[in-house]
Amino acid sequence: MAKDSVKDPSVANAQATDGPSLAEINSTVEVPQGGGFLRKLMAWSGPGALVAVGYMDPGNWITSIVGGAQYRYLLISVILVSSLIAMLLQYMAAKLGIVAQKDLAQMTRDSTNKWIGYILWFMTELAIMATEMAEVIGAAIAIHLLFGLPLLWGVIITALDVLLLLLLMKLGFRKIEAIVVTLIAVILLVFLYMAVLAKPDMGEVAVNLVPHSDILKHGQLMLALGIVGATVMPHNLYLHSSISQTRKIDRSSNKSIKEAIRFTTWDSNIQLTGAFVVNSLLLIVGAALFFGHGSDLEAFGDLFNALNNKEIVGAIASPVLSMLFAVALLASGQNSTITGTLTGQIIMEGYTHWHLPMWLQRLLTRGIALIPIVIFAIVFGATEGALDKLLVYSQVFLSVALPFSMFPLIYFTSSKKYMGEFVNPKWATWLGYAISVILTGLNIQLIFNTVAPLFK
Image 1 (cartoon, rainbow, N blue to C red):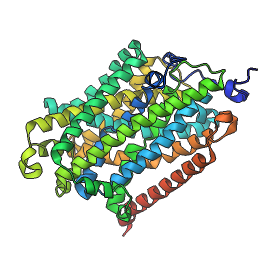
Image 2: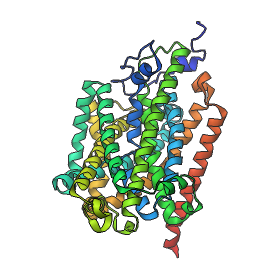
Image 3: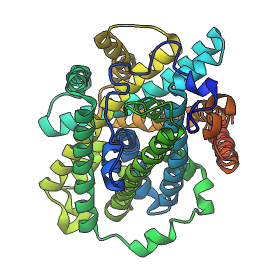
Image 4: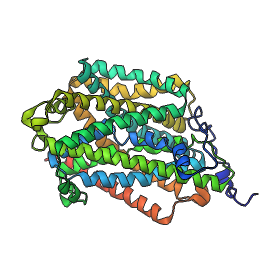
């Protein structure tokens, strides 16, 4: 055996027993063997953008903007901490895919018995449904605001995104990455422009980057956990562990694997830093423009109208701002549906070992997410306020569901049995477990604070 080849047979032969994750794009992107740092970074860049999309989806919008409108800049520290947690977890997820050649769903299913696997799949599927709710609701409301179509029709139209994804997959994975990056740029530029117009108090922003004890109060905690759920999203751990395998590398060489991990981590951290900037801009705009009107701005439609209301945002109010907001919201929803649908396929195939035609697989995963939204819209009314409340609670549920993905990820990447010499350093393992335990404790406190008043 060559000196730099993988020494652990459990790593060298770790190809998923059920076939590679996202087989149609697995190991399809060529990367240069030589050249400088920037050339290699450009070749490896892309998967991080698809992951970052989940950190700036419509769920982030409502929680971050409302957080700013209600509590000014207090919760910006939550966005910072969430982003740092995301960087650690996404590093682990990408490394798992590169080294073990399995995604997180495959690893979990292969390491448990059938029934435990199905239970975990059900829990993860609920998290995907919550994720898809945010994406579908955001896109539907954007369509309604831009074109005046009824919200229920907007929800149904989003189902056609599945056909768009099928077309993009045929064009190649790099095309998908390029489209996603373009839509991210639209969102960033729109909110950067709004933030410049809003003239926020940057001194207060800087002070609140340090966490404050007021965050633990019930109302603030509810939104803080919503921000965590919208920022550190369970489905991204599954997605990254799969799409990190799209690059073609020499898996017989430790040097090649180390390089893959290195540049994938660079890609992920750069893109997540961009997501942190976007989320911070969302909260800053909410605080600078809408503070004092938080109770009146609980829906995207309220925000859309407020941007054209001089009594709320002052002299900068204009129909142009409102339209830019809606365009960015549509870009966010479209971006997120691409990654959400891909993740639905990863989770279903990994946990159940079901092999369905690609079009049926993606139609099924999108359909599962649409059903509760349509039912909710019919029962409670397809109004912006009702759908926005559903969106906020979906983000809180994501925070509750996150530990079910975090603990297995940390366990697998901390085990030499699965990772060989690429096992997590001790500090990363203990930090990861500490984060999981703290987050679980905060979720329990949130549930208690929410349920306790019902029994008084």
